[in-house]
Structure formats: C-alpha cells, structure tokens
Amino acid sequence: MKTIATLLLVAFMALSWSCGEAKTCAGCKPDGRIVCAQEENTGALVAFGNDCYMKLYNCLIGTDYRFLEYGQCPDLKSLSKGETESLDQAKAQ
Image (cartoon, rainbow, N blue to C red; front, side, top):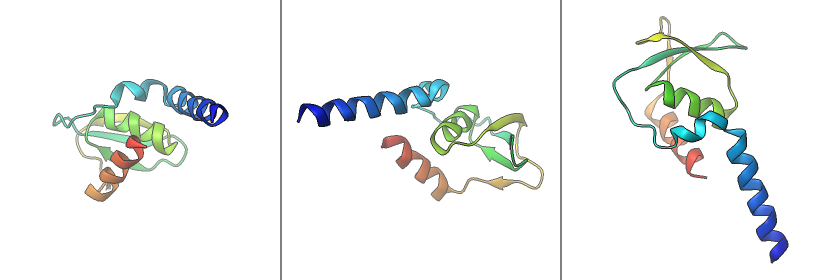
C-alpha cells in the first residue's frame, strides 16, 4: 500500500512539474480576449478563449502554440465547445 501511495505521489508531482507555467492557469476563465496562436512545429492556427487557455492546452496536450495576435485567426481552426470540454476533463485528471 505504501508503494502504491508513493508511486501516485511521484506521478502527480511529475505531471505538475511538466505543466510548468500552465499550472497557474488551472482556473482559466473566459475574459473576452480571444487570442490567435500558431503551433510552432506545424504552423497550424487556432483561436483560444485567452492566453491562459492556450498555455493550459499546450501543457495538457503537448503542443507548442505561440501567441500571434488578439482576435480570430485568418483561416482559423477554432476549438469547438466539445474540444474545450475535453480540455476541462483532461485538466481535472
């Protein structure tokens, strides 16, 4: 039992550290400042609810989106409500 508890603690700490700056965004709230971001490796454009959601998404999904500008992206792939809900579920795990 002690071994399992220790392994769970180590796993939790590793996940927390891997999220770095995004940990501070655990309480991301919509603020009306949509951001356009570009994925560093693929060049894909995505609009996020704000920069906090972008950082959290990068952390949880393992992407590297970077802020481009405020507002919608040209030729954008927007995160749908279902994808945002999936992000909330991943954050809760």
